Amino acid sequence: MLNQPNPNGPNALLRLVQKPDRGRSLVATRLIKPGEVVLVDKPLLIYPSSLASIPPFCSRCFRHLPGKPFHCPTCLVARFCSRQCLSLSHPRLLCCALPSLICGNIAWPTDLLFLLSAYSLPRYPLRQVLSLHSNSRFPDESTQILHSQLSSLIPPKMVPLNFSFETTSSLISKEKTNSFSLTPKETKFDGRGIAGSRAYGLYPWASMINHDCLPNVCRFNYVDDPDQENNTDFIVRAFHQIKEGSEICISYVGVSRLYGDRQRSLMKDYGFKCECDRCKIESKWKESQRKSEDEEEEETGEENEEQVVEGEGEEVNSDDEDFPHAYFFERYMCDCGGNLAPLPPSDGSVSDMMECNCCGEVGIDTSISEDPNNF
Image (cartoon, rainbow, N blue to C red; front, side, top):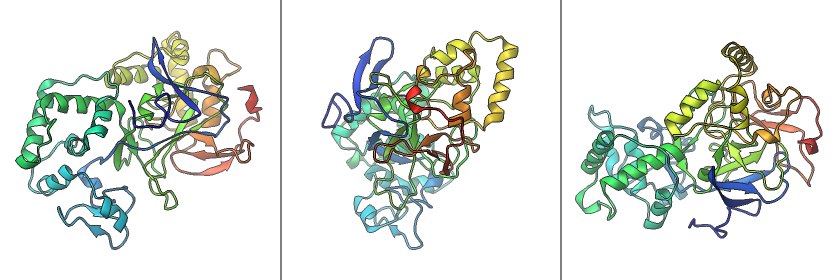
């Protein structure tokens, strides 16, 4: 059971259900308005994306460091943006291993940063990480090498009680399937993955949001916002109106990626073939038509590669049955490649201001005027 007041859902807006064809799913408990925040999820674990992420960012909250940061008195490598972050420190096994990781000419796998952080968790949060769903399978040989390297970095007196090859293999599988990036604003998507990711996080409820190739929710990242106290929270807002009982869905790949590209990526990284409404339509297109539509999508905007940007096809309609996602690209895609969602409603009224989850730009909705109640 997750460490939340309500085991049936993360909040009053969402309910956890079990679907025969999709497993654990989060569905709306009432009508959700455009721009409404549907989920604020705190991380089980935050860890650096690479050794290069350690010097310029706080090792606790991953904000940019001030001119005079606070150094970790133990490893002398990690630095913190405030006394509060210093007091909270960073994972103890990672702290112990950092001097070895940054010295010498050994190219350590970045997966070690995750494993050292995960094995530093108290027993219950670690159990939560291990309870996350995963379809991924990784070669025993590569995992065995990782486990051996990990063993060499942990002092005998600090070896966790649950330290084993099986646990290491399970942790790697969970991380590959469930991690989300912490990416600063003004970072453009590179068409394959997140450019400029400084850290990754595992979130208990966000990991239960299933995939769809047309979105109804969008994640917003405020890692550098000085006014955001909990800057690593996973914040999800609705693109448009979502009916009661509808499933909340994100995309595990970029919205504007091509049909074949999406399918290959989903099978390779997550172990399933997508059969959402959009994919069912695009799978029937002739190859020449697919290429023509794909070129049109690329002109609409660069590929958005946040791991969190999709929803249910049934909620976004188009006049053209053969191209139902045209409206999405017109209204919810930013020129930078990010996604646009309305600001949260004020006094119950839907905002006409759209915010990009990538570049952070906020502007008036200039798309075709539609009554949000029609979605």
